[in-house]
Length: 448
Image 1: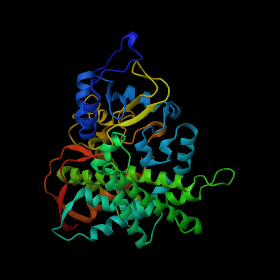
Image 2: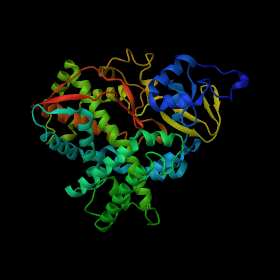
Image 3: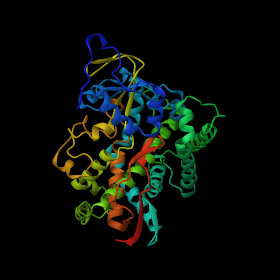
Image 4: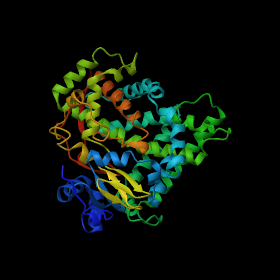
């Protein structure tokens, strides 16, 4: 791994990087993977690239640790108006005590013990969706994952269980996701052009308001019948402070749920598609996983998936190989020491997940999909971090792997699927995330 050593009189300057901001911004929007790889090859680690602002990147576990072990007070909350418009007053927009308070209220609903009660719903949602397939049906694995993940998140996290209510919210979430991923919206947001007259902005504003209104409606229903609802939204709507007042106002609850949706819906769908592709593309991986799953009755004991070492290793390797978010960004509030550099206030720093996860000094033959590496070795939190790290680690870091294990196990045990192409397509920007350049297509052959 190449290291960049600052001179004594340049310690408060930024590490080297591409000279011109506009080409870097365009590459960051279109092909961040190539940008990261080129910059590290040319400038070493750390390097500076202008994304939404000057950003210092590191993939070295030493630098990653320095970022993740700094307290939330060391970083400012979201600065871009476009980000605030998307995420509102959620916990991501706070630092220090308020950030910790909001996360602490949500934490009980996202702990492993609470989520295990949702496993049966996840199995049921997956089986219901599979029953709609007919032998010979052509499948887009990401689209199928999107449909299953959407059903789960509406039922399990958004605290809605009636079919008409679920379908209305599904439609609202689909509209919101489309508007959020619209290229015109992304481009105008990146440039700070947030007026509704600019392309994509008005559609986004309408779709977000519709989703927020539905969340307000559900919050009212929960408070009218607090014992009838479960899930994260119900927990937040009924949580109180020490003096008995509500822990959140309705807008804060809605903003936090929208943030959870962004963090957990499309990312789950992408991970599901990649996982099925990876398992079916390698007969040896598929056979080993099927053998491990053979004695498991998912309907009777859906939580059995948590004790299966090879299934766990497969999911870990998927999240290494296809991390949906390639970079973990923080805005520095006070000077931060990073690998010998003093990064000034107002600059962004980044733990570059993608570069770390494909570093041959950490992962032997990193471009080979090999779940066995996670059977043979434990990686540190600064070598493997698909959900970020530190106090601002993704709140879905327990939910997402659990959901993925349940979905994959259900598919492998219940049906036969044949891939159109066993090759892995390259990563490309898909909205704010990374996804396959070409669809992950398969054919349903029938029940297992």
